[in-house]
Length: 136
Image 1 (spheres, rainbow, N blue to C red):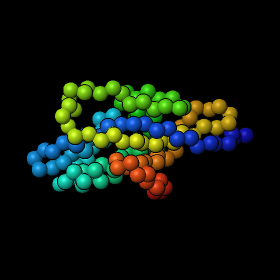
Image 2 (cartoon, one colour):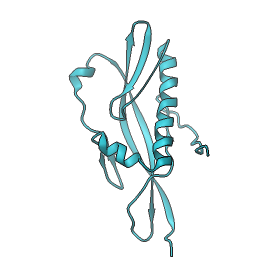
Image 3 (cartoon, rainbow, N blue to C red):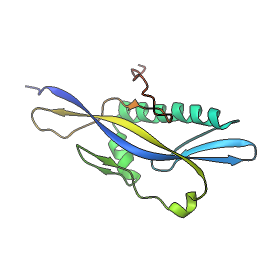
Image 4 (spheres, one colour):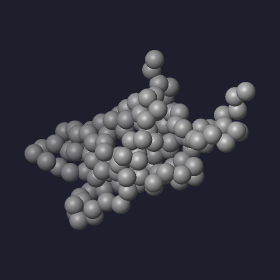
C-alpha cells in the first residue's frame, strides 16, 4: 500500500549577479548554473526569472533536481538546501541581489527518501510568484 504524500518546501538563498558587457546586461546565478541576458538590467532580471523557472520545472519533471544540485556542490537535507561556497573575489564589485528559491520535497508517511515535485519561485524583487503547472 502506498503511503500518503506530504508536500514540504525548502528555501534556499542564492545570489544573482548582474554584469554589463558590451551593451548587454547578464544575470548570473553561479550556485544554480543559470544565467540570462537583456538589453537593460530589468530585461536581464525578467529573462533570468524565466530561465530559472525553466531550470526548476525541467529538472523536477525529469526527477533530476537533487542530482543537479548535488553535482553543483549543494548540501541537501529534508529541512535545508545549502548552495556551495563561491569564489567571492570573482564576483567582487558586481551588482548583486539575493534571491529566494522555494523547492518542494515530497515525503511519504512510510519514511521514503524525499523527492522533488514542482518548484515555487519568488522573484528577485521578493514578490512571490504563482507556481505554474508543468506542461505535458
